Image (cartoon, rainbow, N blue to C red):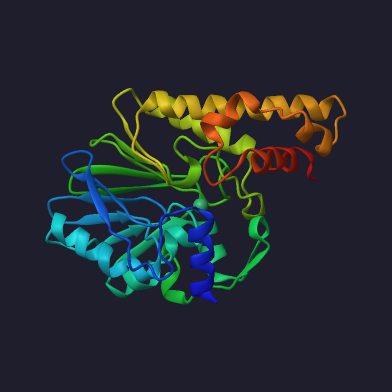
Length: 295
Ligand SMILES: [Zn+2]
């Protein structure tokens, strides 16, 4: 069941993954002196390597844990002490149990604890997701924010608004000037807003506004999926989402129902550039409409 779920999720995220993950290669990219991104299948992994300690962000899928650790071992001779989860989805937390068993301590927003430790129903995929074993659960949780001080690096782990889910944690490395945004940022694509997990389009835009206010032109921005970019790409993503939200909102105000809105193809100016990913144009319209018209 668990394996079925992660496979299902991997396919939905259109990762290039073989059924048994056999073909997945973990690629690493150095971003700054001390920060790396690991690409495999599932959410992008961040790795901070300090003098004495190191820290991992997100865990991809359980069958990849060994390969991820091999990749980490090529970059540092000390295994990560900390694992931060940006949110609860299986393509970011599937390896939690393995990494906890390796001695990593898991940190996350309190809603990640809630959703990993209890049975969930993912409305987006009409799918039951059973509670994970206790070694998957965060040991340390936060509500608004927490700060880690590791080998001279100031690491802000914070939640602004409910966006992708209600437990999004973003990670800002102040001295290295890197931010890992988890799935608050689907680089170059329409966003996945998991309404059933407490996400909201308005909250997503507010979170993006706060991130854009916080970072500068030099900040390296790591998305949950896609490539590492700088501020203009994030600004374009934020503006696209806010505009789509406004367009659909105005049509609802006019009294149009869902079918009429879809028929008008209201986001056609964006579909070619942004609608080729996991979230296709109709799904994006549906998300915004559902979000704006729910109780
Ligand atoms: Zn996600």
